Image (cartoon, rainbow, N blue to C red):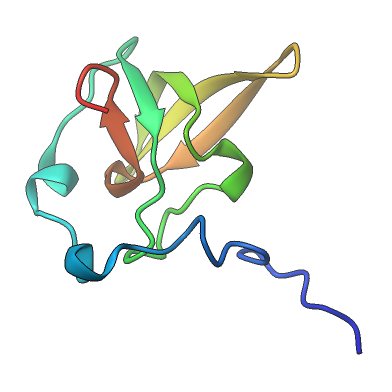
Length: 98
């Protein structure tokens, strides 16, 4: 039988919360505004599926380029290239806080 190759495949331990952290995240993570040029860390929140970046960007540091709707465009350096990631504020944290 072929294995699944979906968007969240092989993320059993990566996208899982600890038992006491289960449920939705605090509202202030969603309401936090980020300025252009601010450094952020991409930390995927598994309780929110919308605006979730790909798992290869989990834990990466980037710079906010702009706001696009409810989400933010974040520039990340990976493997000698600059990648652009679109993620909602639930999945990013300020660099000093993370």
